[in-house]
Every structure is written in structure tokens, then in C-alpha cells.
Length: 461
Image (tube, helix red, strand yellow):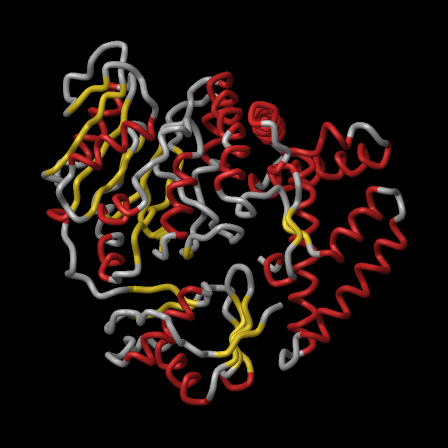
């Protein structure tokens, strides 16, 4: 756990009038002078004046027109301890151009355009469909990929903001109302709504996607950053400043998959802020057949290798400390008792380092950390390491435990035993893993399969 103070040197102030809402993880101690929360968890120590300011903001007082207060608010936002409700009125739909990349989906395109009639500027890029789309603004003579189609679209736009929506997306009415105010903060370069899958049919894959879609980042707002709770957002639905797209030269057209993750991470690397705003929902039409769905999961997996090359350290199968590595190496070697002893020693060391926190809170935080690390290892087993795990008895035992955990999670989420959903959850991991391995062989790297060794704060998510 890393503790930081409220120093705001070099931090850009939050616009005055912004209201702040506490993240559910936020805990306050010592009369509000110690703040704990965020993803990964941060421990901030404030002086009395700063603590009083935070107390007021959490009671719905707006951030004042004061540079020091504005920079403190920015630190809280960046740590994920609070989330912004900016004042409205800076932007309207007249500042937005809709860009729709599409290939061979005229029905979905028509449905999307009907749902976005309030936008005067709309650009549909036909990426070489077999039959030319009648409502397309511009057409590629051959398929060049989603990244190229999006680049063609945003470069034709003249507005300050560009809204990317895929042709299999249907936004709810008023979907821009909660997104546009976020751009009143000059630091914000992109905002993503929540993407949920529609129950359009009764196939097992469609029912599974409705509850467990990988495009759905959950119901909690968050700053987007690698190795956090919301580490990326899909460009199936994303609003971006056009100037920010120009600064990073848009999408990387060499990437057939994962181009959305790459763009978001380059926007962040350029110094901008990307926010996830789940109060807005758009609906995604999932693949209708099991084969198409599994192929999509495989394709997503193939992006891991090129992304790990472009963004070294930001994409990893697991985040482990040196002590975690020792613990799980002992577990894999079939030595559970030494592993428990090392884990206990590590936990005591961490608790002692959390000076100022009540002992019960410190113990709870460390216990949650151990659970998070165990879950990361279990997921890495299913989504990457399983071919190696099959080579030893202890590896097979760990893999079996990982599979059992996945089945339990699906059962708990569905609140009933659902064999079809359980099998699809395992097939999801298997297809993605196959894509990861295929991408690794294609790019001659094992980087996506190697855990990253970090300090304790990065694993306390």
C-alpha cells in the first residue's frame, strides 16, 4: 500500500462548479484526514484544511474557483476516490459527429441511424461490404478493418467531439446527456458509456452474453487506466475529442483486433483522462451463433500479443508481488504449508505498513488483497496457463480449482445452477486462451503469458 499526501504540485485543477460523488470503496479515518479507496487502493493523508474541503464536497458542495482546491479535487479524481458531476451547458449535440464503421450490416446500420436522428452530423463508413450500403457516406473499395473505417470517419468530421458507435449498437434515448458534461473538463479526452448485450434471442450464447458480456464494464463509474478495475473501454461506443484523436494519429490500422484498447491507452499516455460513465447505457447485439461467438472470443485473444508489444507492462495475465510469486510457486510445487507460512508473514508485514489505519480495516484490506491475487492466478490458469498446468499433477489440481471457482461464480451470478451458462463460461475462457496462444506464436512472444511483478499497491485492486 502506498500512502501519499495532498501535494498538488503540477496537477491541473478541476473546473469550478464540479460536484464530487464518493466511490463506494472510499473510507475515511482520523476525522477525514486519511482517505482509503480507489482502484488500486490508495491511502491519502490530508491536512485539516484539505479534509474540511473534502467533507464539504462529499456533502454536495461544488468545487470552488480556487486553484489549490481544484488541484486537490483532481488528485481525488485521479485516485478513483471520487467521481465528477460537472456542470452542464458547455457542449451540446451540435458539437458531436457520429461515426459508424460498418461491414455487411445494413439492418443494424438502419436501426442505429433511426435511434440517432437527433444528431445532425452522421458519417457512415462502408468498409467494403459485399453489397454497398445505400445509406453510407463513404465506401472503402475493399475491407480494411474497423480501425481504418473509424479513421476515415473522424477525419471527415469538423466538430469538436466524435462519437463512435458500431453498427450493432443501439443507444438509449438521451444517451449523450450524461456524457457531454464530462467534456467541460479540458483534461477529459474521451468518455465511454456502459455497453450491455441485448436479449435478442434464446440461443445459449445470446443468453450468456446478456449477463457476462466482456464489453460490459459494470455499473460503477471509474477513471480508465491500465491495471485497474476498468483498464480499458471498447470503441463500440466511445465519445472522443477530435483534437485528441489527431494528437495520437487516430487508430492503429495495423491492428485488426484490440485497436480500441490501443487507442485508449495511447490517449492516456498523451496525458489525457478517459472516463467510464455507466449511468448511460447503449445496447449491443451479440453474435447469434455459438460458432460466431467463439470466433469473436478467439479473435479478441489474438490481440494480446501485439498489445503487449506496444504497451509493455500494461497488459499482463496477473499482477504479483515478489512475495506472491514465492507463495504461488510453493503452491504449484505442492508445498501448501510453506506457502501459507509465507503468505501469513507477508500479510503481517503489510498490516504493519498501514500506519494510521484501524487494525480491523488494515486486516480486511490485506485479506481482500489475498483474495484478489488468488482470483487473478485462477483466471490466468484458465485463460493462458492451462496447457502448462496439464503437465503436472499439482498443476492439474490448481486448474481444477480454477474451473470450480468459475462455475461457482456463474452459479452465484445466475442465482441458480445453469449448466449451459457454466459450459459457455469455460468455453469463453478456452476460446480466448486459444487466441492468446495463437497470437503469441504469430508474434513470437510469450509476454501476455508472463505475470508482472509489481509493488503491493498495484495488486490491491
